[in-house]
Image (cartoon, rainbow, N blue to C red; front, top):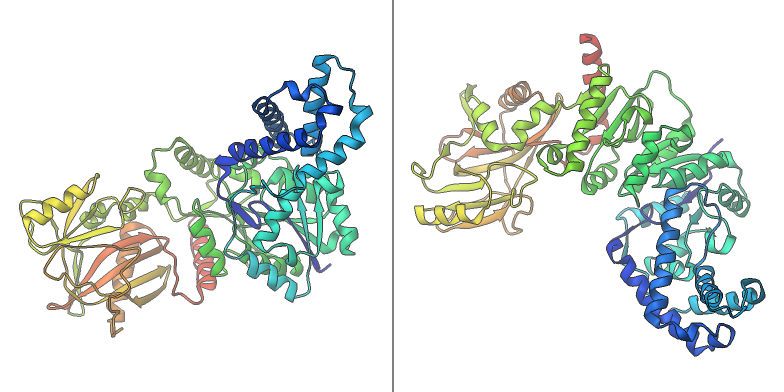
Length: 570
């Protein structure tokens, strides 16, 4: 049956929390306000022991209880009812009375105390809901879903609903959602499937007409699966990566989603795919992008969305990939991870390598061995052999030492990514400025020939596909000039000519792929002003493909082509 409604999680699904590290500090400040409100409202009459405890003692006691409660909620999938802040506060007050032996019992004061505490927690004077932002594609996705007639619901766990509502309103989410199920108001919390059933009733839909979208496998996905609805896992920046890794390692089907995305821009085409039902002879592709920017790029370009020939699912490398299903192909961008000294990043690389050892019938795109050439500028320059084709010389810039440098020249880091200032470039004109430029970097550098150019292009390659896009031209000038290649100055001119010898480019692309073993690459190509040489200035793995209009289709075809070759050779 066609999907008619979508139930969303909030945190890390529609919004991104930017200050999780300040959560305890913010909560303590608010608990202090709660204490002062209780004193002013005469709580000491009902709870005589309250006045013998300072504001600081109360804040610390409530904070310890709340942190323990949150930890239990995060660890266990059996906590199915909400423990509201009003209830937590009352339990602290009753604890004080029991310790003092005053005879005040929870049963005797519950209704009136909870009513008063709810009133305090409904106040917004001291409210600090934290620093949240919508994902760049949240609002446009919600608006488009509404335009298409989908009924939208929201399922959220929160012990402090007013703070939650305040945050939703400030972000502009509230008017875009038709129906709400907030744990503090309905009593149950995720992963309790009753939350979905409540929303289904409000939405007037059946389980097979709705999907649940969320970031946590043991909350959102488990809840949806238990309620009998289809589930979509959004793996952008999960609220707890450790929770997700734990559930993937367990390998229990109840945590496994129907489909997966890395950003909301992929949701509507994923819904369309689910509406189509199954397809025969698909290949299954897992993909791993460690950085949010790459995930958002991918969604904006409509890529890595399941279709008739390929079904896609984001994976994690620090848990057994096969626990998310059997994959024919794994696509990755782990360039930074290979260079990282982080134990977690090294664990991810080992996880990928171990998976390939256990699954020799799975194709990795692209092979890790080739990344040495995209990660290290000197390694690529040393590997390259210049050639002459149709009268045009194709080469890389000459590398200098400090002793034999010819001016002007350009200084950049030897490592092309991960290290600090890897995109910083400094053009220098004399030995003194060269020495100064080298001191600007705290890592190994290369000194490269400056190639005066009449034109420069970014050449994108995806298998047999390529596209050359004109880029900004940099003039060496007469004095030291620094720039960031990822954020070129706005005032630089762009090529006015796109006159490249296509046959030479095709030969160059062929040799690049043969040398590196990589097929998802780009390079900066300068056309030298005086000689007309084609000079490969910089080389990158798995670029953004921003100017490739049909990127999704080209990527799909590349994966299919490489998989056919792989199976033929097997």
